[in-house]
Image (cartoon, rainbow, N blue to C red; front, side, top):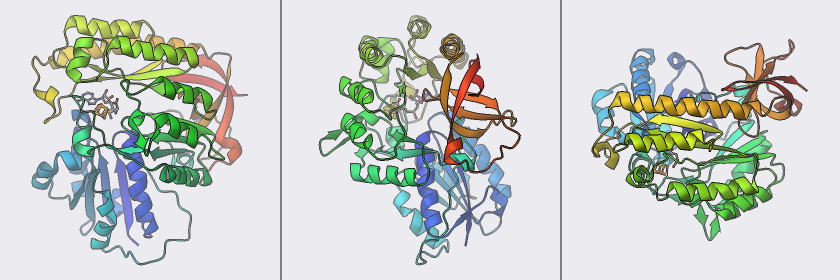
Length: 442
Ligand code: SAM
Ligand code: SF4
């Protein structure tokens, strides 16, 4: 049976898509390898959100040109396959096929074209499919990866924020029927998942036969065996009190909310077409903070969006300095061809985008560190992600707030599938850093 090498770039949505592709290949009897030179089929599931993500894919494609065996096939899937279809056809002859995020139902027939038999019964053996994820801090060794499962609840996005390529690559919004979502969650729980993340570009836009996101949270929250539930990403325009009330009522929901504000200036928010003002954002989070004290609020920020003035930038900085967020992903604006912001004037020069990014990141780091310090002396429940990549003498995991924790690894602890008792560990926190927490097993 053919063996597959699968590498994933980009966001958790791509990781979820890779899991789906890998599952389809596995159901046809394919095996998986982490060595591209040994694979019969190589798949890159790609990202186009920023230029840096694209550059990494193109550089990997260059390497695979020499690593790929004669006769093996190379598939480029994901957002870059959609966005750069013509460029890839012209400039990357080593690529045998392209599948954008809306084409995945063609995956099995493509495998059939490449000689994978599709009429065999599914394999008896249980196998966990690999997901070579490259989001920093988010990947974990295969033996632990199944503990955290990603379940898509929507596809596509119709918000058309002026900087964003996603609506062009992933297409219009579709909400997945709740029965399908429940069935997938039940499957993941049977396979050992302790934490389920509901995924969508804007989960708050979920709507299926009158069931909205708040209703879906309540419905999913009743699934037997569900221990931890979380969700990504929320949009401030559609996030509402009903969702906050559901979060307060569903015991499995973990204490974290990712609500990207993008910037602290109303003029820039308008140019971004984000559909809310800073005041409206703050009003929504005031209710959230009141009902859910001690949750972690995280956000995304874009620095150097076109038209952003020094005074706009200072408003973003002030929002961060005020301690609004426990953590922020801070990005420099990256023009995406075909989006309105790519040609908006004036563009902010690159060095200035980076200066603003560094100032905002430094301010956020202080706030994040203070948040982490608040855990010193506490015993926290940690979902194990595996041995620490930086220091294999330590184990690592994530708290319900999604904070990384490391602790000394017992001499007898090996990289093998953890039993249920090892999946969640109580850790006493002794030190706080900007990146996370250090402790010892309670
Ligand atoms: N759907 C989510 C939302 O609305 O926030 C996330 C979409 S995107 C995968 C994740 C983040 O990337 C965005 O929140 C935004 O901060 C950032 N991003 C998207 N396009 C960008 C661009 N052209 N330049 C810089 N950052 C960008
Ligand atoms: Fe992109 Fe905006 Fe849709 Fe998020 S909501 S995916 S930023 S268009």
